[in-house]
Amino acid sequence: MLKKLAIIFVAVFGVLMAVPTMFPNLSPYFPSWIQPISLGLDLKGGAQLLLEVDTNTMFQDKAEQLYEDARSALIDRNRGVIRFSGMRNVDGVVSFVVREDSDVSKARGRLRSEFGDTVDITADGRTISLSYSQNAKDEMVNDALSRSIEIVRRRIDALGTKEPSIQSQGGKYILVQLPGVDNPERIKELIGQTAKMTFHLVNENLTAEQLASGRAPKGTEFLPYMDDPNQKIPVYTRVEVSGESLKDSQADFDQNNMPVVTTVFDAAGARKFARLTTEHVNERFAIVLDDMVLSAPTIREPIPGGRGQISGGFTLQGAKDLAVLLRSGALPAPLQVIEERTVGAGLGADTIAAGKIASVVGVIFIMIFMIVCYRGFGVIASLVLIVNLAMIIGITAVLGGVLTLPGIAGIVLTLGMAVDANILPFERIRDEIRAGSTSLRAVEAGFHRSMKAVLDGNLTNLICSLVLFQFGAGPIRGFAVTLSVGVLTTLFTCVSLSKVIIDWYMNGKNKKIGYVKSK
Image (tube, rainbow, N blue to C red; front, side):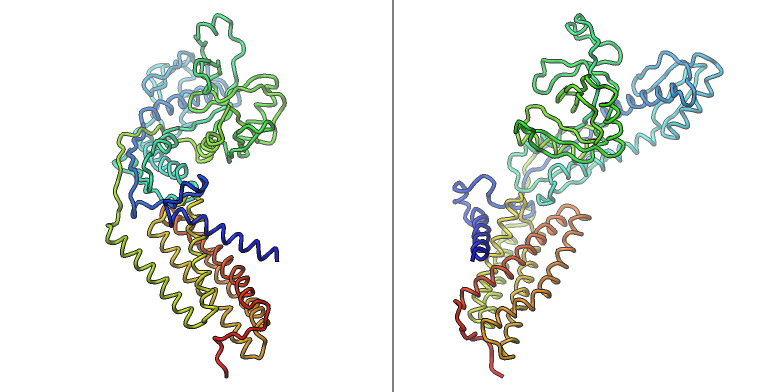
């Protein structure tokens, strides 16, 4: 009895989740996480953002990295130190003076082996200059554009339910269309953050005069605290561990029940993090996000497992947003919003109205067919079909999904499978009655013996939808999510809920099933 009550409770709760969508005026009476399902770009429209990839900043960062890599290559003790002086980076060109004439060709050879054809290397006496080649710069821009598109998609559509339209324009622009978004401010914040996280050691050797003046010595810079920008932390410019080594990040709570972000590094990052925390016990290190210090804790003991925790006075939503940013990866270059507008529905009102009429008429014809063919059981099947539809809409809304034409196609396909999942046990019940079973035994045997066929058909569709979700993007992933939700609700309603209602319909008596014809 408890099992049946639990099934009825889940069904009623699933229907309630769809009420705000069916009756928007009732939305204020429901919790904030149960809201009407949003309509997609093709049905309602939304917001449009035009983003520009800041290639100038990207090239400056690449030049700084070139400076550090060239310096490391020249002082590599394993290959022999090459003595040099006056290394500097001016407008993307790194130059230095080799102290010995005999080391000029050696330095050029080492740099060539280090960077290959990605840099142009010139020598004027003992002065060597290197900069990225034009081909390398073009590849950087193309790579930054494609990576930025994918990162933006992951940030605003982690579950694949929002179905945004994201495409490149003009070589360094990204056009983002967000369905059902009237105020895109939070989306702009989520997109705009570079989310470049690095770990640096804190310079504890500065004098009081240096701290007061804010003038950092070479190799050190003052970075502001995110919680208090007026407070500056002196950190070494050398990056000990890069955020590129992050494998996963999740919002969580610490022992004081305060929101934090947990991080997991890949194998290379875990080794670097373990070495950092082993060699610098009782020293402070700074967790830096977009040139601001999130926190600067003291290393109490080595952390060999590659797992860390970031605290910084987050709200729960702030911790979730940061986890999404870190998990999706750092943008290769900053993105600037250069245009913002509202776009209309991609489909006309007549097309939308015709689609609604077609859907309603289709459901009505299915219900009439079921009632004519299976009478009382057909009425039950129609009721279960409506519950199934409501649960699909309610769950999709709770997941933050939007309703688009591909999503509607997934719902229609699900309803077709749901009808099939009802017909299979009903036909088995007919066979059992013709074989001489009593009505109650026929119902029990019909559901039991048809279960394998129902499961096989729905699980096959579930596997296909998971493959579409894994390898698809945009509307394809939205279709896959809707189809996956529909498969699960179909199995619940057409197997568990339908069986419970039929048992109650039979009312524990050997009631005759009227839709079975005599031989």
